[in-house]
Structure formats: structure tokens, C-alpha cells
Image (cartoon, rainbow, N blue to C red; front, side, top):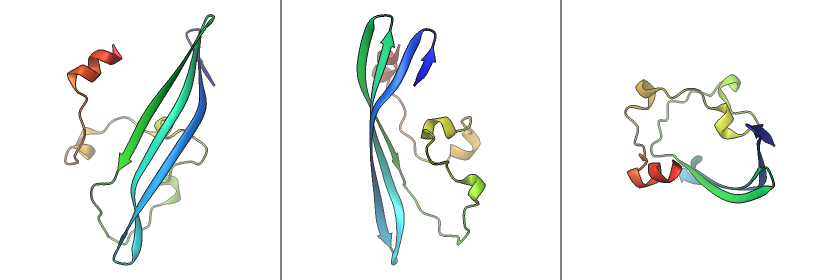
Length: 108
């Protein structure tokens, strides 16, 4: 539960689906799909809302290097809380899905 500016945010449920692909006899992460049901409480009103997030792997580079443990995500922590600042130089050559103007107006 998080409290911010008198508003309480609480996660009611989380459903996670993980998909793998087999390539050359080895299994690799293909996608992770999250559905979160959350409750927002403000004064005497409660709102239930659902968010969906998907992480899709679009390419695979097999260089044989293991990932150091300090680079792994921590179990039990929300994925979005473990992200650092956006690094445009790193992500510049990757495909991304940009928010549409319609989506941006709904957020406002």
C-alpha cells in the first residue's frame, strides 16, 4: 500500500503470464504480460482500476556472457520500482511503442 497526497494506492491482485521460445534447443524469454487490479482511495471514495503491461523481447544476442547477480531484478519488488532513469543512448536503436495523442489526453 502506498499513500501519496492523501490518496491510498493498494494492489488488489496481480496476474503474470510468462512466455518462452525454444531456439536451437535452449529456452529464452519471449514476453511477460502483467494484469494488475488496483484500488485507489481518496477521502470516502474508492476506485478500482486495472492496468496491463507487457514486456516483449524483439531480438536475441547470444554472446555467452552470464548476467551478474547485481544486474538481476529483485524478487518481491515491483518491476517499475527497479527501473532507473530512461537512457536514450541505450534504447535509441530498439523498437518502442510510442504513446498516441489520444492516450496522452486520457492520462491528463
